[in-house]
Length: 133
Image (cartoon, rainbow, N blue to C red):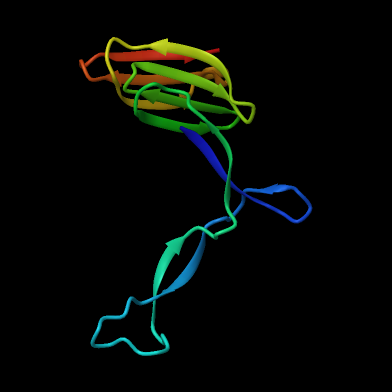
Protein backbone atom coordinates (compact mmCIF):
# COMPACT_ATOMS: atom_id res chain seq x y z
CA UNK A 1 0.00 0.00 0.00
CA UNK A 2 1.12 3.52 -0.66
CA UNK A 3 0.00 6.16 1.76
CA UNK A 4 0.93 9.61 2.83
CA UNK A 5 0.64 11.06 6.31
CA UNK A 6 -0.69 14.56 6.52
CA UNK A 7 -2.29 16.91 9.01
CA UNK A 8 -5.44 18.80 8.13
CA UNK A 9 -5.15 22.45 9.20
CA UNK A 10 -8.16 24.36 10.61
CA UNK A 11 -8.42 26.02 7.18
CA UNK A 12 -8.89 22.60 5.53
CA UNK A 13 -5.44 22.47 3.89
CA UNK A 14 -3.20 19.37 4.05
CA UNK A 15 0.20 19.92 5.67
CA UNK A 16 2.89 17.32 5.02
CA UNK A 17 6.09 18.94 6.29
CA UNK A 18 7.77 17.97 9.59
CA UNK A 19 4.85 15.87 10.84
CA UNK A 20 6.91 13.58 13.06
CA UNK A 21 7.73 15.23 16.34
CA UNK A 22 9.72 14.12 19.34
CA UNK A 23 7.44 13.45 22.30
CA UNK A 24 7.95 12.37 25.86
CA UNK A 25 6.20 9.27 27.15
CA UNK A 26 5.90 8.42 30.82
CA UNK A 27 7.82 5.42 32.08
CA UNK A 28 5.68 2.37 32.82
CA UNK A 29 5.62 1.89 36.60
CA UNK A 30 6.53 -1.40 38.25
CA UNK A 31 4.68 -2.58 41.36
CA UNK A 32 7.68 -1.54 43.49
CA UNK A 33 8.03 1.94 41.99
CA UNK A 34 4.45 2.88 41.17
CA UNK A 35 4.07 6.42 42.52
CA UNK A 36 0.78 8.21 42.43
CA UNK A 37 2.28 10.84 40.07
CA UNK A 38 4.68 10.12 37.21
CA UNK A 39 7.79 12.30 37.32
CA UNK A 40 10.16 10.50 34.94
CA UNK A 41 9.99 10.14 31.16
CA UNK A 42 11.79 8.51 28.28
CA UNK A 43 12.32 9.89 24.80
CA UNK A 44 10.33 8.20 22.09
CA UNK A 45 9.30 8.93 18.51
CA UNK A 46 5.61 8.78 17.74
CA UNK A 47 3.27 10.53 15.35
CA UNK A 48 1.08 13.33 16.62
CA UNK A 49 -2.42 11.94 17.27
CA UNK A 50 -4.08 14.26 14.72
CA UNK A 51 -2.39 12.58 11.71
CA UNK A 52 -4.66 10.90 9.20
CA UNK A 53 -4.01 8.92 6.05
CA UNK A 54 -4.55 11.29 3.15
CA UNK A 55 -4.15 8.78 0.35
CA UNK A 56 -4.01 4.99 0.23
CA UNK A 57 -3.95 2.83 -2.86
CA UNK A 58 -3.12 -0.86 -3.37
CA UNK A 59 -0.65 -0.91 -6.26
CA UNK A 60 0.96 -4.38 -6.10
CA UNK A 61 -0.39 -7.87 -5.43
CA UNK A 62 2.83 -8.87 -3.62
CA UNK A 63 5.07 -7.30 -1.00
CA UNK A 64 6.75 -4.08 -2.11
CA UNK A 65 10.52 -4.66 -2.30
CA UNK A 66 11.62 -1.23 -3.58
CA UNK A 67 10.23 2.27 -3.50
CA UNK A 68 12.05 5.34 -4.81
CA UNK A 69 10.69 8.88 -4.66
CA UNK A 70 12.10 10.97 -7.50
CA UNK A 71 11.28 14.53 -8.62
CA UNK A 72 7.86 14.15 -10.22
CA UNK A 73 8.03 10.34 -10.26
CA UNK A 74 7.67 7.36 -7.95
CA UNK A 75 9.18 3.95 -8.79
CA UNK A 76 7.92 0.79 -7.08
CA UNK A 77 8.82 -2.88 -7.39
CA UNK A 78 7.40 -5.98 -5.81
CA UNK A 79 7.52 -9.71 -5.26
CA UNK A 80 4.69 -9.84 -7.83
CA UNK A 81 7.51 -9.32 -10.46
CA UNK A 82 6.31 -5.84 -11.47
CA UNK A 83 8.32 -2.62 -11.71
CA UNK A 84 5.96 0.33 -11.95
CA UNK A 85 6.55 4.00 -12.69
CA UNK A 86 4.05 6.49 -11.25
CA UNK A 87 3.45 10.19 -11.78
CA UNK A 88 3.48 12.24 -8.59
CA UNK A 89 1.21 13.47 -7.04
CA UNK A 90 -1.63 12.12 -9.23
CA UNK A 91 -0.44 8.49 -8.81
CA UNK A 92 -1.21 7.80 -12.46
CA UNK A 93 0.58 4.69 -13.76
CA UNK A 94 3.04 5.72 -16.49
CA UNK A 95 4.99 2.52 -17.10
CA UNK A 96 5.11 -1.16 -16.23
CA UNK A 97 7.84 -3.80 -16.67
CA UNK A 98 7.55 -7.41 -15.54
CA UNK A 99 10.63 -9.39 -14.49
CA UNK A 100 10.93 -13.19 -14.72
CA UNK A 101 10.86 -13.50 -10.91
CA UNK A 102 10.21 -11.42 -7.79
CA UNK A 103 12.08 -8.11 -7.81
CA UNK A 104 14.82 -8.14 -5.18
CA UNK A 105 16.52 -4.79 -5.84
CA UNK A 106 16.10 -1.64 -7.89
CA UNK A 107 18.36 1.39 -8.34
CA UNK A 108 17.27 4.47 -10.32
CA UNK A 109 19.51 7.21 -11.75
CA UNK A 110 19.15 10.03 -14.24
CA UNK A 111 20.89 9.37 -17.53
CA UNK A 112 21.78 11.70 -20.40
CA UNK A 113 19.14 14.32 -21.19
CA UNK A 114 17.49 13.59 -17.81
CA UNK A 115 16.13 10.21 -18.93
CA UNK A 116 15.27 7.86 -16.09
CA UNK A 117 17.47 4.75 -15.98
CA UNK A 118 16.72 1.73 -13.78
CA UNK A 119 18.88 -1.23 -12.82
CA UNK A 120 16.61 -4.01 -11.56
CA UNK A 121 17.48 -7.41 -10.12
CA UNK A 122 15.20 -10.39 -9.54
CA UNK A 123 15.44 -13.49 -7.34
CA UNK A 124 16.54 -15.68 -10.28
CA UNK A 125 19.71 -13.60 -10.63
CA UNK A 126 18.60 -11.67 -13.70
CA UNK A 127 19.62 -8.04 -14.03
CA UNK A 128 17.60 -5.66 -16.21
CA UNK A 129 18.68 -2.23 -17.43
CA UNK A 130 15.61 -0.15 -18.22
CA UNK A 131 15.21 3.41 -19.45
CA UNK A 132 12.20 5.71 -19.44
CA UNK A 133 12.25 8.54 -21.94
